[in-house]
Image (cartoon, rainbow, N blue to C red; front, top):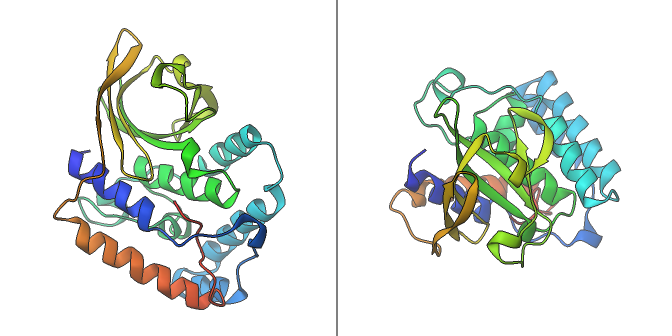
Length: 241
């Protein structure tokens, strides 16, 4: 995963939808499900209805239970390389595409987990995408982090790792099998990490940057947002990043 791709990912998170006030959260319109069934088929709409019910029924759980539920549920999404899934070397799937087509690569699955946790009323302040390497294989990988205390200094943050390769949610300090490279939040702040012998420290912090390839991605997400807002009786389908 190249640096520009991670910045594009950040922009997607920021553009994924408009604000939704928690107390005003309402079930999606039947129009949404009818559209998905028409476009993706009966199996896809069945998966979406299941996920929608999970969100409605579990918004009152404690945060860590939500985190564990989302990781366990969405780890059922198969990992599929872009070339096999979309017949393209680097395809940017929306969260809805990942769910309805039943699969994606590690960043696709991490983004879906982010979005579902936002639906479950987890603040974006607690969420980070983390680019890591698997030490044993050298594989580039992406996971989602849940920070219990996001305002704490880096070394004092209690983080938990949602990993599509690992069913159990573990503390970041326990994931010594991963080499941390950097994290990114919904505002586009990139934190480069120095990871030596599992001693992790901040190497550098970079605020949101504009990239040339962002325009096409932002346009696609904005168009999707408006389409589903119309289908959902004028309400945004997704919460804000």
